Length: 310
Image 1 (spheres, one colour):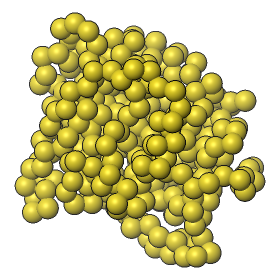
Image 2 (image 1 turned 90 degrees about the vertical axis):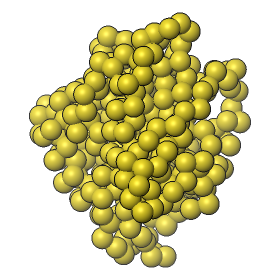
Image 3 (image 1 turned 120 degrees about the horizontal axis):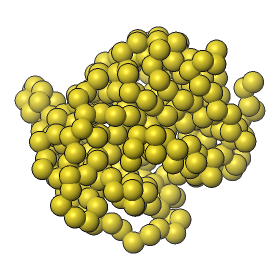
Image 4 (image 1 turned 45 degrees about the horizontal axis):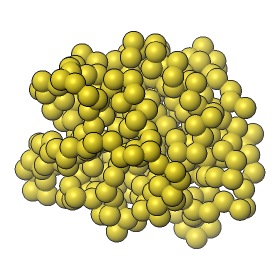
């Protein structure tokens, strides 16, 4: 069952012992995702997007991205997809494909081009780890640091806004119809970029977005969620495009309560957003809602896409 909550709306579930640690961008999790039957791979182009100031010594750095376009010359509406963040440095370095083929096809079937960057500090893009927020936990699951979510959000915005700027120069792209979507840290990135009011962005989708979780050490609890709530409150005062927030209550990174607080703080700023809170994704970490919970969110995403005129 899902519980839709809108901007006008002002129990923690027991942790499932059988659940295993999973992260959206770790190769092990991606391998598990890709073990499911996949449609034929859509045609992909590798492109490079310059990100000013993102290099180790402050220079520009070329960010690798995967581009998928519908048939024809365009111009096409564009989805910019933001991947999540694996906690392990080696796993981040191994990231290859930031978006799954079946989800690419969801958008291609609607005439929307898909651009999925591999951000600074990941995969073939490489470079410094600009997105570390400094969260840490002791062996008992207690948060032992003061994370800096604002600095992480700035690094995310550098990548996303550079991508938007690049898209708006492409002849195949409709520069007035750009949609942002991401999961986990990428969902956080999409909310932050929507709040920046980048030209051409007409809406965004946030799957399980947030930061500071550690399902291995602190399942269902993130580090200093109140700080992220306060940041979301700021974003809600400036974001003006519609958004769709999707979370599962058995999310082992953030738990059932913190995302609701983030959303309420955001919506209180007047920003048009809808939250769909799924009771749980059976047998899975609910953080993997995008991959394993389609039956819970598909209609809501379909309706949201239609509302954007896509």
